[in-house]
Length: 401
Image (tube, rainbow, N blue to C red; front, side, top):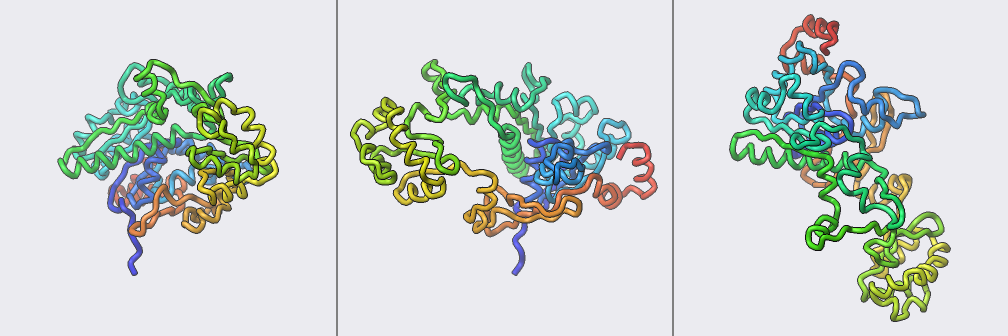
């Protein structure tokens, strides 16, 4: 039986990305079979190679878990794109590519003569996707931003945290991965248009705008009523018995709803007082939230999160539990679905990677090990672009590659 191919097999992608958002967008392409040529600076490569975490905490450019996760099945070539001698090489690669993805500051590529107008002259059918903090236009386009800045400007920080405390930042790189997803979807949409019209497109992704799109109903609330969404802490939307509660071995997500299932809470916990009519609807629970918590907390503290979760689900209650990384790696449900795959890297050893964000019997995810820095120089510059061995040596000695 023939092994299923990747959905994007045959797609040629020139990857000028680094850090997280851009590499995640191209990871979603490479793992689905796209042919990715990743450009890295000769001195150190993608900064994520230095970000870690590293085995035993010892930094090594080929052992960063972040880099290994973001760059499977890609080809790495080194090229100093700011060097004038790199111009013709870049233009040859633009001619080769169906897609160019980059996440430099908006002024960077125009400064070296590789803005979209020039790229589209070289290859009129190419799709160029640009990812930046605030987008390619607007008064903030050239502003710097850290993850903290992006959470603040995107509005997510304003609605996160307790109502009587300062706004909170999310712990993970949510903005980066979300923008990478937007870039991936935007690229595929533009390719669909290209296939219909023959014309390339420039896709502009702003990381801050991704965060503004996941504000739930905060923006519509302000638009419709003029009132601001308030931080609600663990009592989401002002509800009681709704959110994470401490239990015997961690935290469990208690979800009190819909109202007609509230009596099941009393059954789950064996607490008849919970069946009092004053707790029977959302308004009553909110008005008596402290009393309700005082009734539930002793029972929750005597039981483990998995037990509570499974017993509640058996009664039709949409409970969850706060999973640790160890819980996720050991979760039998994910293993049965084939969510993880072991990847062996020649320098870093064996790592466990999530395969991808969806599954299909018609496609196999490609998690071939992430490349060593410059691993594919000879293949790309020699075999693809036709350079001689002497020319490659000359470019390397001149620090162009």
